[in-house]
Amino acid sequence: MHTRLTPAELTEHAARFLGARENTKDAYRAWVVHDLTRLRDGMGILSEAFGTGPLHAIAVKANPVVAILKELVACGAGLECASLEEVELSRAAGCPPERIVFDSPVKTVDELRAALALGIVINVDNFDELERLASILGDRADAPSSIGLRVNPQVGVGRISMTSVAGDTSKFGVPLNGERDRILAAFDRYPWLRGLHVHIGSQGCPLPLLVEGVRRVVDLRETIEERHGEGRVGFVDIGGGLSAVYRETDHYADPRTYAANLRDVCPTLFDGSVQLVTEFGRWLHAGCGFALSRVEYVKQQPGVSYVVQHLGADFLLRPVYRPEDWGHEFMLLDREGRVKEGPKTLVSIAGPLCFDGDFLARNVELALPEPGDWLLIRDVGAYSVSMWSRYCSRGMPPIVGVDGDGVFRTLRAGEAPEDVVAFWTGPATT
Ligand code: PLP
Image (cartoon, rainbow, N blue to C red; front, side, top):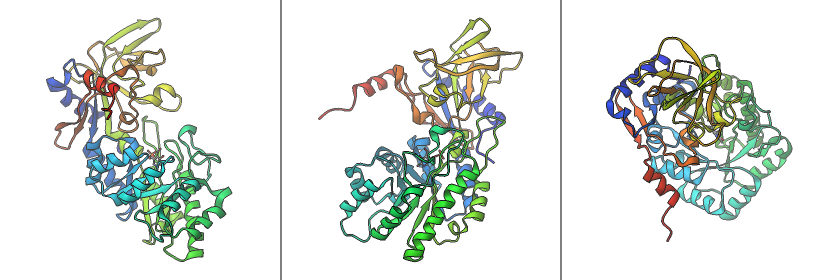
């Protein structure tokens, strides 16, 4: 089971959305739509799978739109933050401090102080950061924050090496094989060190890899508790990493299967003896979002048509630069939002940016495209808006939420040229 919008649901949303005349005005050349009912359903699936005890701290980097973060917080979610700025986004979304998890690998001393002052959860990335914290905390036995240590379980990499972080030499966390004794010594020394954190990778990490990574960390917890007694490790944060479906042919484990496997292999994660934390992002968000981008031109080239439309590497950075790893499915709609039927043709989908590699896809089959059609890009709810690039200085499209009642409301207004001018002018200096 996954949260992906089906073609029938997409067609219904798009027809209703584009049927409203103001949405086809020239100023709005592209839109991003996020289905909030689908998002809440996804949170429900996580709770069903893992039970109600765990804290699901959803990765802000997957989708940082504050209105969307607010929806998550209202569902009881926490938020996982890769930067202090993401911590501020979480606060702006009303997330209680004990549900904010701060994971940046480059925390400065000031950022650590700020995190302690806020009382948010801190996952320490390395021993030097641990020493920084120790010198801030002095000889205190407790800390105003829950503090964990990120461990690299060194279980290997998944299909996509760039987003796999549990290889032998990942830049994240403390390697478990070589540093086991130092990890144990850190727990001997710092009573305020109370948690273990692991994130194995994103998209394309097979389930056995995720489960084995968690198992190694749960084993470590047992060793720590053998030395210090039960309850010494207050939380185990298993990170994110469940894959999202991007193609009809993709088959990935869903949260139920993941949780069932973990219950078998690591039952102590579920027996109430420790707080379980997760940090899913992509699985939850990706399939809730779709984009509509107007076909501006269709250029005939020998053997192929270029569909020139408004979203490219500014929106889908990874699919443009690493098409062998990432890709999306598309639908072609007419001006009113009806799916275009009829004969198919091979097209390459060109973005608007000034380099010749700016293609969302090459040689895909679509109905005959015409200027004024809408390209629907599926599964853009995660790592798309959040990776928006300023190259060529195009304004970010409006982000719209749709609810069960079929009503669309703006979650973030589209950027006008003056907003981009303000961005490049920069914040006021004092
Ligand atoms: N937690 C950490 C530490 C991460 O680095 C990431 C992604 O990079 C996530 C959670 C979210 O991963 P995903 O979106 O694959 O679930």
